[in-house]
Length: 208
Image (cartoon, rainbow, N blue to C red; front, top):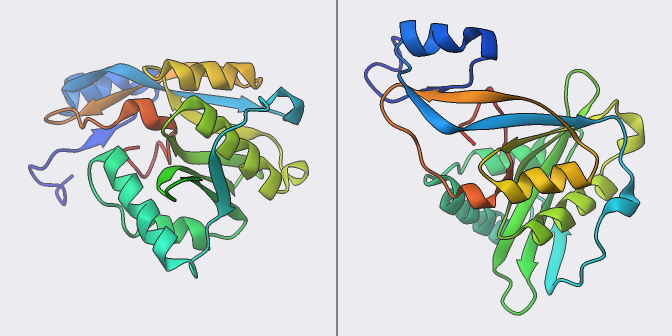
């Protein structure tokens, strides 16, 4: 915390450590929402809706510089600040796939997502940001198609419970939700476009 100084900082304490961080460690601001970690051992692809969306989807690579820059801008619009180093790292990560959705009539980014293997040989989906639940579901479908799901032991998503459409989507697809994990800040809550967050990037290394 010496390195952070007097700047704002956030933390996601496990339930048994909530009071310790909030009441004794200076993380006084608790949000009205919680992060929800959900998992499924397997995925039935037939559960996905056959929606006829007017969008295009593609796998993002570092060679596609224009699309990469547009995704960075989209990510910044959702989160409220630029994470220009994060998106290239996602694309370059071993055992991962990043899918981008664009509007068919304008090529404007309307969502993107990443899936990657974790240290427990499972798959983590996140971030998954989209303009609507239908687009998020389509991106998730494409992520699962692009990833060797049969080689991993379960899939994890991390939604926020104030995005009811994200919670509904996870439930529909057979994810089992765990207990809510609180978000605490030292000074003030960092507001983002919660309605576009269908799965967070990480509870350990990123705000959303």
